[in-house]
Image (cartoon, rainbow, N blue to C red):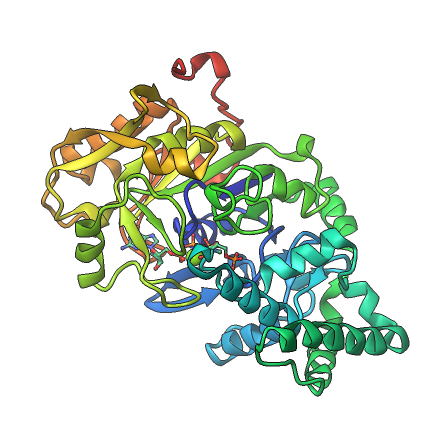
Length: 445
Ligand code: GDP
Ligand code: IMO
Ligand code: MG
């Protein structure tokens, strides 16, 4: 009977899927409220690996309801293929188990092509998008030219309107010499929409009823704070609000129904795509890639890697109202000695504790590190705080001290069971909010 938002605190791929899956045990409803199938959330349980793009990670738990909210950019063809993949893996998705908002905007085949075109035309300034059509879908929403799930029910209106949009997009694509969208794809879109129809409903009404009945809601953020269209490293961001507020606008659940926010952060930092990354470190990247780690779940691209950046996390803690942090991939640092934490930046001779606004400043920012001893031990079989080596515990408590945010969960492996709850009360999602008051935060320079 309490509602929790999970957000990514970095540039995505923090391990949100794993944390949401772990916490779903204590929830009744799991909700995606923004982003689309640019997301790739990996969940490993009983040795089986699932990669979820549009489906909330709660889908792996029978008896839980999953909601795709109004704020999601929904690719119907992609979603049907994702459901089919899951079904081949032995997970059935029944109509009462997955509810899709009738207000969700559709990502259609021309959005993907236009995404490709916009990237192409940016040349070496390209964002490195996932090419899933996310930017063009949200642009159409803002232009008020998008199609929402409910609009497609009136096929006499929708089919000609869709043909019209394909023709308009093809004119733009043809002028740029890019491949065109085959109008025959309309049939595939309609087949996917028909397949999804039993799931489509007024999810806002459902969520409010669920709250009234005392259900526990878990909001699964996609992407991360620094990919947020407002708060991220603009323009090297995605096109939705990935921060805590996005969970409310993207679901119709108001802020006063939210009880807590948990941010997920890796024990180091990664980023896919282009854009500034002050603590980037190629040696760390080579180390992780040689271990077969840090390849994108959606595109397979190598993730750029670097040290943990508390300037970013401090900002994430503020704007998301973070009550607690879940730190994942601590085992990734097992063989790194010493380990480093960026506590602040030096920018043009000044100490900076929060990220500057411009890309140029972020590129000039020099990270200032604290160096801590490594633990040189395989921690992947640790299952309690006490079992962790002292140096690993010190790394976590140093993060807490610098951020003034408690680390409630530590993940030491990709599997559901490789999870350490610092405070077992978080397992029930019932703890009262332990929100950090602004006056308890560190002084800002
Ligand atoms: P998400 O997008 O935030 O859900 O994260 P991704 O699934 O894209 O990327 C996180 C990666 O880290 C995935 O491959 C997970 O299986 C993996 N992972 C999550 N937590 C841990 C952990 O504690 N240790 C290890 N070794 N892998 C983890
Ligand atoms: P999850 O939910 C990491 C990045 C892309 C690119 C930028 C814009 O798995 O954490 P887009 O396709 O959204 O227009 O791309 O955002 N990006 C992600 N990076 N994890 C994600 O999702 C991402 N979704 C988008 O690489 O830099
Ligand atoms: Mg991911």
